Image (cartoon, rainbow, N blue to C red):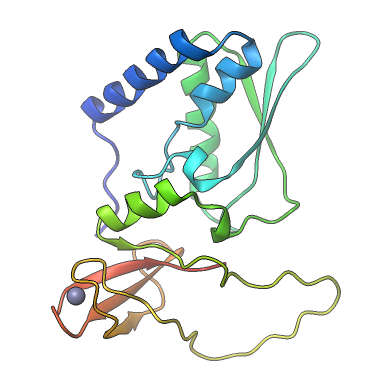
Amino acid sequence: MTTPRLTAVEVVGHRGEVADYLDRESSTLRERAYAVARTVTDPELPMLTLGDLGVLRDVEVTDDGEVVLAITPTYSGCPAMAAMRDDLVRSLGEVGIKARVRVQLSPAWSTDWISERGRTALAEAGISPPRHGVATTRHTGPVPITLGVTRRSVTCPQCGSAATELTSEFGPTSCKALYRCTDCLEPFEHVKEI
Ligand SMILES: [Zn+2]
């Protein structure tokens, strides 16, 4: 099972909201670029915008009027990054903004940066959101590692039961693990904390 891509209708609906927002709020090129960029959706988790994910770190306008977007990769080696970059450049191009994307590696992205709206959107899509404040502690210098199965307490997004078991550490994408609820018996995906 792969995560479905947005349909044309959903994309149009999304863009419609952007247009309203621009008419109401924005004036400068930087603000317009930010307003569009933050609503671009994640290729693997299409219910989340880059704004929800917290990957959009900075928007600058160069002296010759080019917009430079700084994004921080989510999961390292995530194949969605190239798609994310292309989607950003294309979405801004559609509203007449020439943009380029720069990757900013530090500070490293954490699932703690996912907004409350994003966590709600995941749960509504039947995906268990990463818990807040349990992401890996940042280290400088040597990093102690423990090998073995990661233990998490995960709640079923269908029925809310805490009686869940890990089925597979790797789901359809490497950022998700597969779980099963032992109360309602439904399988579901969990976005891993990092
Ligand atoms: Zn359940």
